Amino acid sequence: MSSELVNKTYHFAKAAHEGQKYGEHDYFTHHILGVVSILTNELGVTDSTAIAAALLHDVVEDCGIPLKFIAEKFGIAVAQHVKDLTHTCDSYQHYVQGIAAIGGCSTMVKFADSLFNYRSCIASGDTKRATKYFYNLEVLLNESTIGLFSNLENC
Image (cartoon, rainbow, N blue to C red; front, side):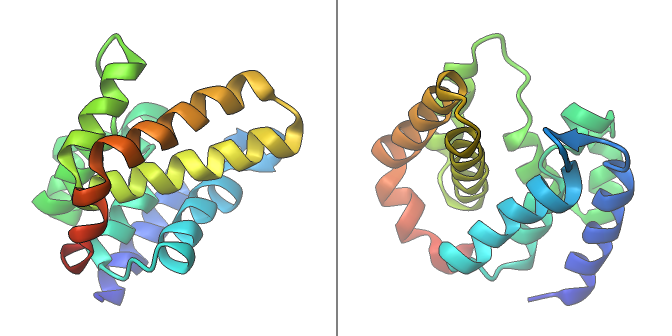
């Protein structure tokens, strides 16, 4: 694992999300680090590119950081995962299905993100949003289980 890449993306993402909230919590320390924790501690991902993508997975949508900047600062591989994870189409369902079809690291990061969001919704009693994230988990597992878990050596 390249600790330099992870360290660089950690500090960049922390600064980019400064002042944002996830409910009552600081967005970066609660959501972003929560997703990274699931990815590394529960899913066993150690690849620095995947961890960097998890740290940056919301910076395009939530902070207005251009993908070109991500590619220049963190490399094309990280930027490609961030691009995969950025919701740009009209249909959220198609977005999740697209990530499921990709497989590998992008799918793993989206799975960790969806699991974090699902758990947060359950904890707060927000069953409507929990249903959305449960759907994500179901799609990510059903449509890409083989790719999701067979590509771990590349993630």
